[in-house]
Image 1 (spheres, rainbow, N blue to C red):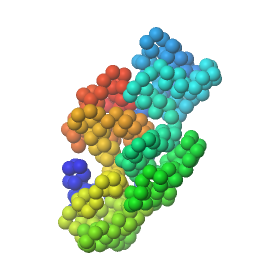
Image 2 (cartoon, rainbow, N blue to C red):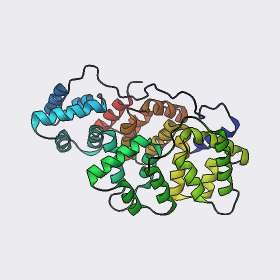
Image 3 (tube, rainbow, N blue to C red):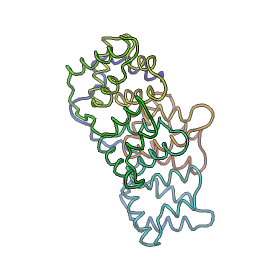
Image 4 (cartoon, rainbow, N blue to C red):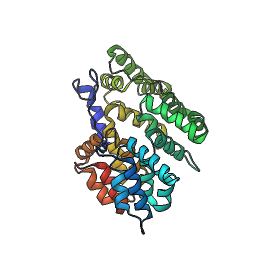
Length: 343
């Protein structure tokens, strides 16, 4: 959190900051997992069949095949395995593997919308809802990704995602998550400076300039404006407040709603840094939150994991891979390091 306090509070004094987006959109690839140029789905399916049937299971081959193929290639491997054996690959791996290593392998076999839907469902399953997971996924995915996840959620679980959310959370947090779930947030990369100024003033008036925060204003701005627009709003906010929006959210709000809105602020300003912080917190102190570790590394491996690794080093002074080596072990450690690539 200290990193973001410095980072976001700096916005008001830095018009040229890299956080203010506009103009051409980045098209370079920042994933760590790339398609295998010599890919053969049938050969890979045969390798996996042999690895599963080997006495004691050949985990090294499973890592080599699963973690070094793109998601699209893994879908072809699943088809080839089903055709040659008459059984789903996921079922075979589930029987052969265990623990955190099994979780990563099964996650990598899912399509991105399937995995997002799976994680959302799991966050709302049983006693206690994992609100941070709901906020992370809905707060960092594009409209297209959220729409695909909602469709998959209905297909896989026979329920509407927004209806499930309504049954799990309430109040302002429910309103925030449902607003994000609509998948109608602006994704315009052009900035409206006049709107940014009026939004910044509205946020100031709704928050620290009055007794009691008007959450509806915060929610409306943070869930409808584009990430580029939000960065400009944060900058203008500094002209009204000495504290900066991040500190205001911390002092005015609390609990799951604060976490959700902070996730929107952080990911708008620097999404890879947001994920780097989550990875750091997952490995900090006693015990490791392997669910978070797995979810972020798997879901970002073909999007921006390269940038997350760079931000982690910049923020915490050591490579992400070093932290993984310290906090994990065995085949789980090996597959996570493979996903991180060779930088």
